[in-house]
Image (cartoon, rainbow, N blue to C red; front, side, top):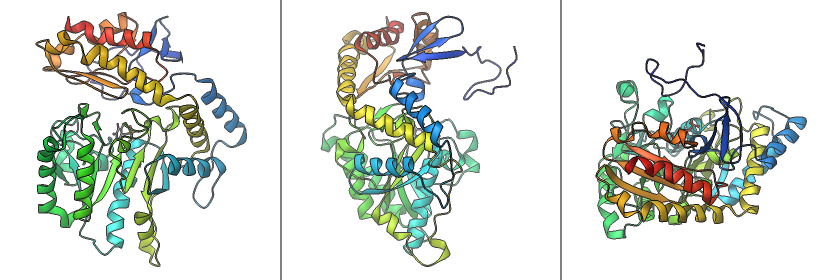
Length: 421
Ligand SMILES: *Cc1c(COP(=O)(O)O)cnc(C)c1O
């Protein structure tokens, strides 16, 4: 029974047998044991339409019959052209150029490399460092690890092997905070910029929701303030919307809550409805224009083999069409209201001695425990109730598929609350 599959984030000595998934339908997947589990995480937040969505499956089948793959170096194809146009249409104004890649981490690498090269081409080669936030998570590659929270993040082991970037404190004022409360966070950001802006190329952040770093929910005023500070100090603003994109915070993109356009934006996870790995790094014309020039250094030297994969682009187009035609923002709003009613308005839960905080934003909810030990056994209990939960650290969260109905949402919430009774 020894499997050669090496699982992520697993301690090899203590890891438990991994259940085998044989299929899925809607918000649920099936195990070879005969169990059916309601997925509270929609598979690391990407399967926003649930499993086996007929339109997404058909789009992949149809595209597979036409063209599965072709390089984007020196060639193009209709699915990539159409998807790029669609992404420009739906993302915040000003983002007009699309660089494809194959995962969220690589999409972030592309964004960071673009920012450094932009400043080089603008005659500011000393802008070689990035500014990130504590509690940030931007991916697991070496470049991305260097902009993840260096202390609480999961990459502390590598810290001395990574490039040194700058960090500002994680924003403390929550989503609903007023501008005065947000000011202290922005003052922190300003202090780092005042001291180091000469060497800072870009500020990277997960707008509104620092996800894997602990589901920290941040005010739109913070995004507006950060935009103004970036302009003041000639620093590019990179929004990593890998997790927040495609409805997770209640709007199509988190940036919309603040009516802010970043200079560079990264999308992945929900981009293909989770059906294939892909990512897009969007850039403003200001960034793009800096790359138009006569020297060899003007070319952007990056090109993932599978960038713009036709299957991935085609299913992404279908995902967007379903999102718009079936009023997903309305569905997300209904899910959000259930989450608010059952979690935020549950006074007993919030007053529970082991609960530090309860937060809801769009189709995202978290019960933050004071201590990780409170969440021991939660996933096993949920599984017996037919729910797949995967808490991490002190955070017990749900990011359901948007097709989850109210009844299913209720069952997920019950499984989450059960350990605090
Ligand atoms: C998941 C995630 C990434 C990394 O994406 P991968 O596809 O796993 O490489 C980057 N940024 C954020 C905000 C994420 O949630």
